[in-house]
Length: 395
Image (tube, rainbow, N blue to C red; front, top):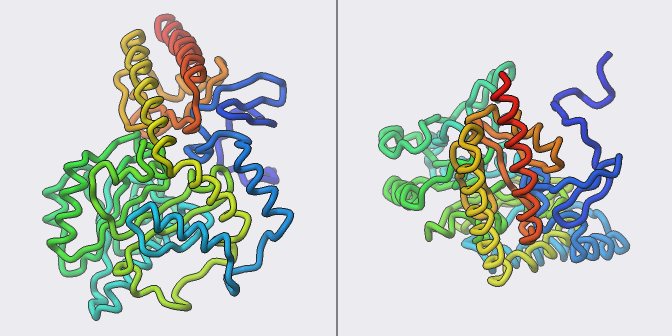
């Protein structure tokens, strides 16, 4: 008999009932160090007082009215995002998947309104992840994402990650945009070098294309800048945002320049829940914390310490780990042992990590991680690695 919850997840046998900071409490009382943060969602950790206060205060006032009316909290959050980013305008969604859908629509509508309706193709890259909607899986193109879900939405051209020459050769008079994650998350924590992001920006400028960045996982302070593309000093046309922006409340957004968004007029897109008072009140509280120089500096400082410690871990367990990769507090351990074995050993040693492609485990801790938390992380990861080593030696 099928379970009452559709069985589309391979869930770990863990049930968390409380969280505080970087720590989760299991139903049996065990405390786990959370280096996953709900897959890069809980940017300020669990039960952050500023977010609890923002949500509670708004919940006592007004939850939902729909986008038929003005929403002051939505306006406030949009103003903050415009102030702190390249964007001129913002559309709020409930998820990264919905942000992808709008980004694709926005790019195609842009060229339609410029009397170039044939320009519908979007260049994407292998290893990418852009959500699980029809547009998202078509954009990623992998068999894992698309098998059984055809016919796929047309208009995506899939290239090898890192192949700049391939990008230039793939551009035709039907090309509308390039879509890329500055750091692939699900794909195994694979950063796009700053020089390549700059080159992609130049290619778009030279060819009249839009540059769409998926910062759903790498944005909102995770790399030590508010958005990862800032390290390369480029200005995108469209950016997809979610996860950390809500700090645990379902919230996403599409950020765009006035030019890129010019085709999106009244009636061209909508969302019943997107940008509701509850979500945007929390989003404002998140940005008030994250979008400050002091906070971002603390992320960079802790990221440097964590990476240094992880390099030592790799050196101490050469049969388990191969390398550290990533940026800021979006780090990956490329494994030699099966990555799921390392994740499961982590569970046994009360530390949470997240698996990814390319035999990588992701470390996506709350940005509020403390130095004491980092020390505990290394103790627990070391125990997990030692446990995996013992299994390898006995095999």
